[in-house]
Amino acid sequence: MCLGVPGKVLEISANSLGMAMGKVSFGGVAKEICLAYVPEAQIGEYVIVHAGFAISTLNEQEAQEVFDLLVQMDALDELRTE
Amino acid sequence: MRFVDEYRSEEDARKFIQAIEKLVTRPWTVMEICGGQTHTLVKSGIDRMLPESITLVHGPGCPVCVTPLELIDKAVAIARRPDVIFTSFGDMLRVPGSRSDLLSVKAAGGDVRMVYSPLDAVALALKHPERQVVFFAVGFETTAPGNAMAVWQAAKMGLSNFSILCSHVLVPPAMEAILGSPDNQVQSFLAAGHVCTVMGYREYEPITEKYRAPIIVTGFEPLDLLQGIFMAAAALEEGRWGVENQYVRSVSRDGNVPAQRQVAQIFEVSDRQWRGVGMIPKSGYRLRQEYASFDAEHRFGVEAVTAIESPLCIAGQILQGLKKPHQCSAFGSVCTPEHPLGAPMVSSEGACAAYYNYARAM
Image (cartoon, rainbow over all chains, first blue to last red; front, top):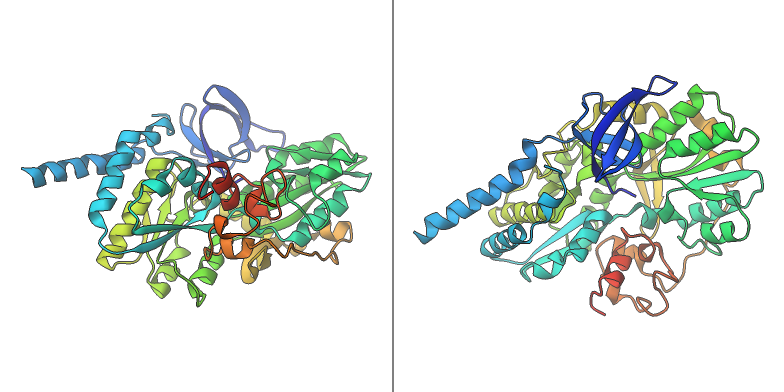
């Protein structure tokens, strides 16, 4: 239930109440998703979707941090073995 | 970047395991709060790859598991009514109540439907003005913004045939209940990344100070979890505490402010019963007075329903991290995913189901 899944925003529109909705693709499967909580989201960006609602826009730069840490750990290892 | 496969590399996972092995000099106990994280840890085998000195205990973050039995019985009572379309996320349908479950109600002719989003339930109410549509609004802070939006929309459209059966729970009070217990063994927490995506992590700052337990906001992919465990172990080894954010790609300190505003407009904090744990003060949400007409308990007069738990099930101890699923006498024998005694065996986020499906300690 709490499983949030990243998906790519394909279209942004508004429903009859003026609420932001959009088409979001999950590995090729597109779903109608509420975008009211991510007013900053742009077409082409990735959002985390939870039970039909996008709850965050993913930051591509910060998404790299885990790998940066791995690279740093490798560099430290090399220093130690030298 | 697709934000999924990148975080599942075996080679990178091994690097983290080695880094954790190098780091730890003493035994440490870390609890992952969220059942989704438990599922990934067990499925990917991280729990078996970690050095023995790191003990992972599984937390109460499974909404299906902590929804009180009374509420399942109330759901069953409402879903049996011929005028009702009862809607729910799929994983609530098989949770056993005292005598029946929602799937059995459906098999007996009740109109019980699985929905993907609470907005689907609102759409059903719009389509069937002659029927009462009820949505089973359970979950942690992650589902609250969606459920709040559903109520807000129904109010905006003047729908008098929509209501919710509400059992919302909150993570920080549960964390405090665990840390404050005399039996507590947890020294550090992996906080649930999507709960914090919505709420931010300011609420955890007083908790980490009070109990001097490091809290690491952690994502859901294998590499996220390994990095979270690495960060927890590093803090514990160095005698540090504080809130650290592993899941920076989705979580900010303030969280999702528009979502928090919508939640605060519809819900207010209230005491809540947690299945297997008991009452935790100020640990959930109920509808605000202005939206009380959307409360299904009141609309269908089921407030007085009470329930009886199976005496065999030790779900309460499992949800508090005091016991592991295989330490239950019913595990895998009289209690299986096909015939569950307790909720942790039902949900894919439940610790018992994860242990059963991935053959832990059988």
